[in-house]
Length: 417
Image (cartoon, rainbow, N blue to C red; front, side):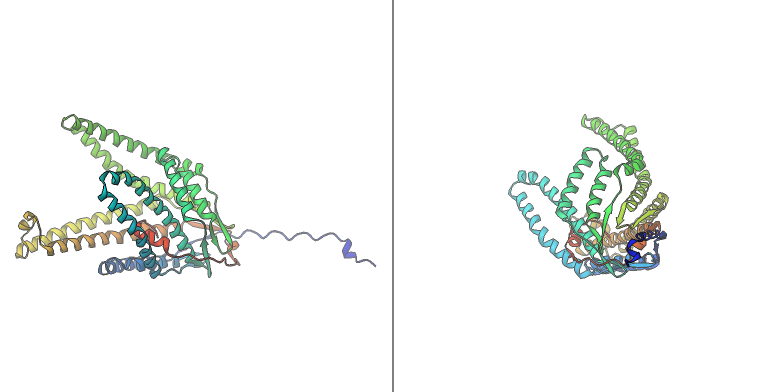
């Protein structure tokens, strides 16, 4: 007798798994812990002639990564300060001969130096883009979540070529091509990024970013054109031998001051729009996010930074004036003779240099607090993660990256986490 099961209807496919509920990302780091860490790091940078910066960068990333919890699990940063130091030395080994060759070319012929400045500058910019790509690749390879590393492939040179061409388009279009440039560059980076075997992607659209931020571009363009028109008018009067018009000079000063004031609001609004647009366009497999980052949160953060910088400047001027007054009153240093002398004492120059370096390190501490940790905190706490369950049970993907990109970042003074 034939098996009745052979004539039965095929079983229906199992129903699709319900979507996982959205989960909020959480930043658990303490502001005080970060402030103490970067303050101590700045002091160690001062006594180590800046070489502690590689270990400070590592400690900062470990703090930010470990305090970022996605689905209840923290990120891990696995990089080391030694890797950054070796990358920096490798970068110097590449750039030192290039800089020396450019200097010798300038000594050989002033005209040749002028002709070489443009290609040298373009080479520098291209290497900067290459460095940014390699730095991102390094950081992804040194980042893990739930015991599994992220990764990145692709060519730094291919990215640099794309970035240079898009840079020309942005310049030629007075900034209008920026949204589409960001789409193209982010898509290249994300499609070469992985979490285990999950491939990244970027689905944001340039038109969406332009639609959200066109008014910022227009205001910035009008402000810049107004300042340029006033500057040209004032310059034309001076070129004819006439005294500059007080009214035009006053308007120019007010315009520049107003632009700096309004620029903080425009920058904060643009960064909030850009962050939300970018975060909502990123994909890792099916995992994606939405963001409720508010512009006023970033604007307030930037004004706090400006306020602290102003306070540091005032305190530095008071300390400098007070120190000079004490030295002059005690007879240790006669400031009138020092300023009148064509060659101030070596000790005086060393003291001024140390004071200036300490001032720069204090500004660096404030920058790390308000432009790194506080922005990171605001962005992470704005995130809602969707389809987080799709990132479970992911297999590892082989790959590695060296610290070359990080070395270029430090040698080129490119800002990055």
